[in-house]
Amino acid sequence: MLNIGWIALALSMLGLGLLGFITGDFALNWQPVPASVPGRTTLAYITAALFWALGAGLLFDRYKHTFAIATAAAFLVWALLLHGPGVVADPLNVLPWLGFTERLEVAAGALMLAATQVPGTSFARWSLLIGRIAFGACLPIFGLSHWAYAQFTADMIPAFIPAHLFWAYFTGGGHIAAGIAILTGVLARLGSILFATMVSGFVLLLHVPRVIGDPGNRTEWTMLVIALTMAGAAWCVAGSLGSAQASPEK
Image 1 (cartoon, rainbow, N blue to C red):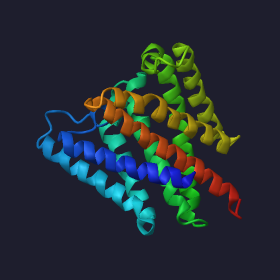
Image 2: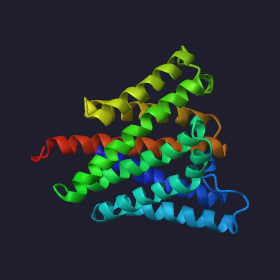
Image 3: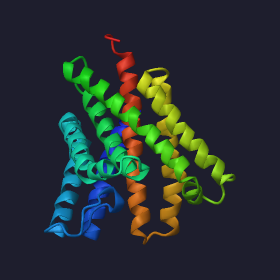
């Protein structure tokens, strides 16, 4: 599980970087950098290069720990700078929280991946705890967004899957249940595995077919890579929880 998360996270970083280089822009709604920012295009290319550096660094086992920490730091900073102001301005609106927690989820997954590279250390213990709490706290926000925008979620489900609205509400409930399990530590590993499986299903059943159906659509490619990033982080968490339970200290 940890290897799946590690590779998916690295490949998604490379994918985000590639999209940045091709478009000369940021990752759409995930990076809402105002158009008025000086040198915006240059910053977009710098960000794309950073994504590539993170992805390439993660692929080398020797540097995995360092680049996992760097990935966690980068996503935390982006969450605070790009989505934090929206949360502060409208704390009761689920949309700013959704953008913030999507970035925080990746930061938490990367931090827990870093923790597994130095087992038994104080860094590992604290990182696993902080990462688990941060990751678990994000999932109910995802679930509430599925419920608040149920029809939008349902409309994205492929036509061959029946009962679209049911699955929109069901997956929302799954997010919330998994978040509670991870936060409380009750069936945390099972909850993390089921969540990672569900998000991976979104990648394979939802986003891949949409890209195949409209290969020239930048939005669909961006959503696919973002979904892969979140799935990679989820598998890092599932694998990290499994490693923690298997360690002698546990």
